[in-house]
Image (cartoon, rainbow, N blue to C red; front, side):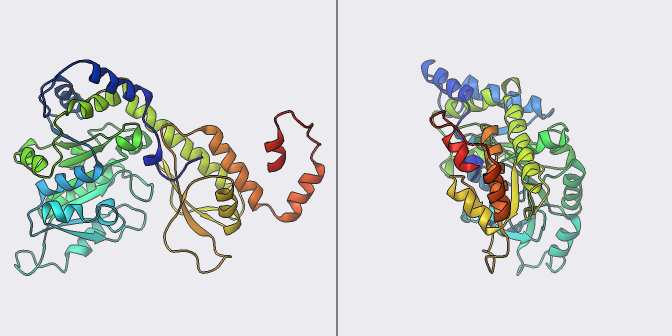
Length: 377
């Protein structure tokens, strides 16, 4: 019943079991010098078809802020979508850790375009000591609007970065969801399209707390060991982060989890848009939906126990549909999706139609376990 965020989801049982095994295996070298961490580093290089420099951290905020600190001098700027997590939801972590300034760019569907980036940098005097100097671009995959960048769209941003001497960072908190949506290889969606550094997320997709900063140009990571330690994100028992990622990447678990979440988001989208008065704000391309709901439908869903977020400014009156976000996860229940659709359909129906349906409904025998169904009907 919880569609508020994939952060609200639990951890995959296989990942929990991996932690138990790591705990029972006895002592290991500390601070990432263990064989589990080494295996994860090698596996990520295999997955991305390239030698990478990999550093594990526990949170996406740490991954983004530390990655960007390696790309940006203190006087530099990070161009990102206006709704990007690094701008809206990380409490100034990028600025605090790197000293750089986050520079938002309008991206109506969550995706940065070359044209929007060119317009944003046009007034900046490059080389002028009075102006923040752009140093990097950060894109989110999947985006904060639930859309995804196809390889050619990443490539267009990558070309902009090359032409302007900037680095390209990808916030991949939902990278697996974007990848299975598109159906390309991890390499095609990252370094082959111009990405220099990826924040590779796992927490939203079945891990407890595990993210990786993946440098596709290892020379950019030459000081990263010190950056991570100084920021307080070097774990002494690193193997417990690594054990999560080792299992996450094993036998395609990360992709299977993402496929399940995406499939249920699509199922929910099809069910809701079939109801009069309900509209999608953006295409559903991963595991997030942004939906405009009449007030009576939203109220009925909240009253029935469904959890989801109001999004953006509240509507000016009760007649204007409000915008809400729904997120599915690796462990979302198809039955809960169907129940949400059924509740929304009932709430959206005109009162006369509900009265007719109730009058035509066959009586339900008492005590057969169907009382809840009778109440909904």
